Amino acid sequence: MADVKHSSVMVVGGGIGGITAACELAEVGYEVILVEKAPSLGGRVARMNKYFPKLCPPWCGLEINYRRIRENKNIRVLTLAQVEKIAGKPGDLDVTVKVEPRYVVPNRDGYDKAIAACEVETSDDFNLGLSKAKAIRYWHDMAFPRLPYVDRTAAADPGVKAAIEASGSDGFDLSQKPETMNFKVGAVVWAAGWRPFDPSPISYLGYGKYADVIANVQMERLASVNGPTGGKLVRPSDGRPAKRVAFVQCAGSRDVNYLPYCSGVCCLASMKQATYVREQYPDAETWMFYIDVRSDRYADFLAKIQADEKIHLVKGKAGQVLQDPETKDMIVMVEDVAKGEMLRLPVDLVVLATGVVPATRDEKIPAEAVAYDEYGFVTSDPKATGVFALGSVRKPADVSTTVQDATGVAIKVIHTILGR
Image 1: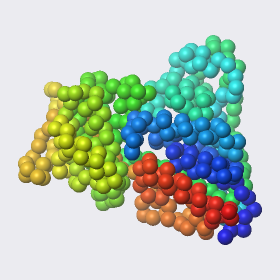
Image 2 (image 1 turned 45 degrees about the vertical axis):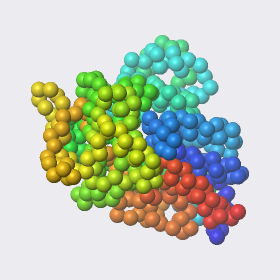
Image 3 (image 1 turned 30 degrees about the vertical axis):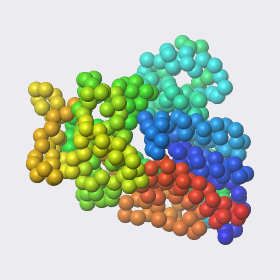
Image 4 (image 1 turned 135 degrees about the vertical axis):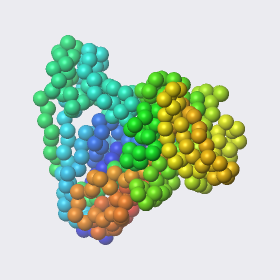
């Protein structure tokens, strides 16, 4: 057991895993600093339309946890923050955190007036670049903490200052600077999550070349009522209803040239998204092109999909995605292995099932002793480092698995480091 000097814990990552771990630790009496680099908590789950196993909107699960945070004085939340350094040993860690300015003064009036007056727009990172957003904004409708922020890329734009002045609000301070904070903690829980694999290098799939070839995470935003289209499933290029949709599995996954492993969640995500299309357009038709379907945990859901005559599961790996120059339809070239024939399928929209890439592949944990496998997943023993990997920085995981892992990690932190 570690030589414990500090009983507080830092949790890095404000997604569903980090929130769960923070709440579990705080509710048994530990002080927790929850660090999130985005302007709001929620992570990838906040961007979803529905998630397994209940297929409910993300707000039902997130709002319960936000209430747990609001009601617990043991949790301190830092948004727009990133850990720069972890030093020391388990039980006695020094952590340096850099907090970027929000340019907002809490507990003031006039936020909404300034947002209404703002005409400066930036790329909407919450909607994954599918739309533009005001430079002064809430990260999304259900943002927590409930504070707006000024996009750093536009903070110096004269139009932002003019909007604030026109609103008469005293709730903004464009002179704010980044702040460095130091903490002493007994352990760090690293729940930084994942990012979707970028399929742009796979030229034959057309991602980045055609507007109507999107990634599965973008499909979630299109289907969401707080997304760029208000939940209407339409083609990004022209707003035409997306009634014929092709889901291309393993878009870079299980491929030695890109992402050699299986993420384990992509098949379920595509089948779930096929139901979005079918529910919105009764005459819609979808196709899912796969190597093999991996959905053992949700056999009943697979049976439901197979029973729908308008959802076609086709064994075959897409060989090329093109665009018809006359109709502007997307054309998927694929071999139907079962039938032994080549298909040239015209569709409105192509959705690529991109895999899970751990955040730690590109952004390493700033602690010397932490080790990773060849794909960037954390492999080091937390008893030696004091840093506990959680969720998709340890291995690909869906929401329910991540929540279970978060509870398990909280227990491990208590018993391994903190000594209870």
